[in-house]
Every structure is written in structure tokens, then in C-alpha cells.
Amino acid sequence: MTKITPVLLSGGSGTRLWPVSRSLYPKQLLPITAERTMFQETVRRFSGEAGFLPPLVICNDEHRFIIASQLQALGISPTAIVLEPVGRNTAAAAAIAALILSREAPDSLMLLAPSDHVIDDLAAFHDAIKIAAAAAESGNLVTFGITPMHAETGYGYIQCAAPIAGIDGAFSVARFVEKPARDIAEALLRNGNYFWNSGMFLFSPAAWLEELSRHAPGILTGASQALHKSARDLDFVRLERESFAGIPGISIDYAVMEHTAKAAVVPAGIGWSDIGSWSSIWERGQKDSAGNVITGDVLTEDSRRNYIRSDSRLVATIGVEDLVIVETRDAVLVSRRDRHQDVKLIVERLAQANRSEASQHTRIHSPWGFFETLHLGPGTQVKLIEVNPGAALSLQYHHRRAEHWVVVSGEASVVRGDEEILLRENQSTFIPIGMKHRLENRLELPLRIIEVQVGDYLGEDDIFSLEDRYRR
Image 1 (cartoon, rainbow, N blue to C red):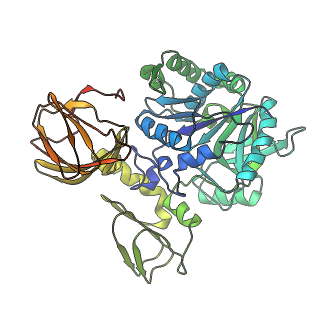
Image 2 (image 1 turned 180 degrees about the vertical axis):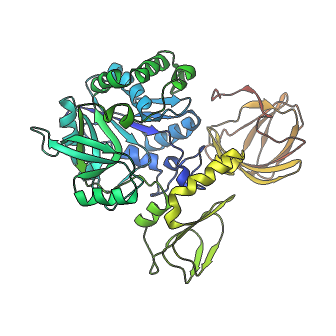
Image 3 (image 1 turned 90 degrees about the horizontal axis):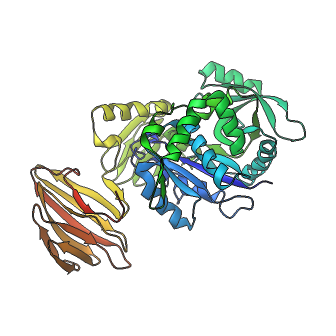
């Protein structure tokens, strides 16, 4: 079998899993279904397997350090981590990947895999990939059709046509059906020749670029320009913004698959789910005797068929049925389970109101560690800051706030004006307005401090960086 480069797509924001998933820390970067994150679980499906080359990752620019750290935790060195300056859907991402691989690994196939899917039967998935690879080696653009379990309205469908000669298990595509209404979905299920569209694809870079130039040449032109003008930034490939932003934001299906004569499908029963909603997590979850799926500190009384998740405090229910209840430190979602597709409407309203809950958690991750807001009031903010071993914040100053630091654990190397001091547990320092400063952890254990900010403005844009090892 020809070598395959997994192309891992990590650009989504997972709005239907709000408030746990948010645009600055979406579902694929979280441990939603396992101890590892969904992105890490996707990486591991191909790691160490014969026939697979190191992955090529295409992700949102804002997630670059999280992606890099999660790969590092697995001991994986990717072919590249490509940064999208703006989201432009899957056709543009596939074009960028094909252009890179046509240069770096021209004889390989490319397997596009969203990084927020779950696959329970890995052996069956690898068997399906072998069939798809045989079809792709013949010049076909192959997608994977998932055996439908029910009449789902949240997925697109693929209808099989004639078998592909000489490749058992692969078929030409008769047509693609967009997300259907309930009655149409039920009819497709009864037909037996329709499969859910998984959004995973396998083809050669050359075949994809040829069909893209035929059916969507504007995407190929924009992708070529964005890659040609790209820049290396640490371990990342940073696409040129203007060229990439001008690419039409459409899917692989819309751009090519619905038009090409080379579309093929491999039906696959692989235990697949895109974990697109809280209802889908309830369906997969381990249920108690009343049909509830419970995560965290939860008490139920006379409650049935609910999904209840608590991240930070006790949640108690009495006499409720068929609900989704999700609690985080700064938000609580309560919804009927059959309204799972409408959670994104709440996120849209939050975004329109410029509320931070739409995009970020109270804990904000950075390449050096994280900070978490413990209290925010007029003129005062209290944060917990954790600095990773060997990491440092930027050398910076503020125009409108002063800061008090107290070391909770570890040892802090502090630049304070023209002096450098060491602070250990229970020791503290004061950073006046306008003084340059930096916090660094030179030990092999995490450093934790409490920071108290005082001033007439406490926004993150009152940070003036003088020097930053992460080039932000």
C-alpha cells in the first residue's frame, strides 16, 4: 500500500458543545470522550501504524501552542503545523495540504481527518483505509460512508452507485444529499443504499489538485498564493493572510466531490461519531438505572434520561427528564435534549453581545502555562497564574495597572525594573504602574502565583511586550 500522510484538520469551534467548548479552546482540544483530548486520540489512530507518515496538521492560528504541546505530549513530530489566519472551510485546507505534500511527499496519499471525531473500531477503520487506498491509487477521490444507525438530520448522506472494478468494498458515488429533513432522512434509511457522510477523505495530492483546478480554480489560486507567501514562525507555517482570506469558504463536497466524475465511497461500520452535540454524548455515554449520563459532582432525584455535567460545583436535579444540564465555572446550560442543534444560537447571541463566554473560559492557556480569573471587580482582578517548567512570560509593562505577586508553590525568577530577584513560597513582590517586569520558572516543577491587579483599567490589551520568546 502507498504511504499515507494523515492531514489532521483542527479548525472548528464546536459551538454545539458550549459552554465546555469555546472558540479559543474548542472541543477537539479537550478530553471530551477519553482521558486524552480528541485531537490526541485522532493523532494516535495513525501513530506507529505501518504505512502512515508523520501527520500534517492544519489549525487555527490561535490554537498553535496548544496543538504543539499536545503533539509534544505524545512524542509526535509532525510533517508541519500549518496556521490558518482565518477559517475557510475544508476545501482550502485540503488545497494547502495537497500543495505541501506534492512537494514533500509526492508519492504518498493524503487522508483528511477532522480531529473532533470518535472511532471506536480502529481495526475496521484501518481495513476501510486499505480499501480506500486501493481506490485512491487508481485516481479516485474517496470518502468514507458511515453505516447509518438512525434517521439523522444533522449529517449529509452519500448514495452508492456501481462497485469499482477490481476493488471489493469501494463504490462510485451516485449523489450527495445535504442534511435532510426528518421525513427524507427516514426514507434514506429505509432505502439501505445511503450512508452518512463522515467528512473524511483519501486521495493523492495530484488527483485532488487536478480536480480542484477543474471545478474550483479560485481556491487553488488563492491557496497557492497563501502558501507561496507563507512564513516560518518557530515550528509553524504561517499562511499569508490576505491571499488566504480571499479564498471562498466552502467544503470539499461543495467545491469538488459533488461535481467530479472520480468520487468514490467506501462504506464503513467503524463506530464513528462526530460528537456534534450533547445529545450525541448522552447516546454514547454509560447510563445509570434511570437513563442519566452523569459527569462530575451530581445528585439526582426522580430524574430520567438526562445528560448532566458538573465541572466545578455540585449540581442537583429533582423531577426532570430529557434535559441537558452542563455547568462550568462561569456558565450553566439547561436545554431539552432534542434541542441539541440549537445550542449554537446561544453562542451567536453571546458573540453579538461581545460577551467573553462565547469564546473563552475563565482559564486562559498560553505557551508558557495558563492564568485563571478568580475574582473581577471594579478596579481589582485576582488571578491564579501557573508557569510551566522552563517557561517565561514576556518582558512587559502596563500603563494603567499595578500588580502584586504572591508565590503559592515553586520558585519565581522575577525581573523587576533593573533588578532580578528570586521568590519562594509565601514570598511576594509589587510591580508599580509602568515598571518593566517578567515572570520566569527555571525549575522542573510548575510555578504557581496569585496575582492581584489594581488599576482603572484591567484589560489584556494593557500589556506592552518588550521581549517575547514565543514571538507573539
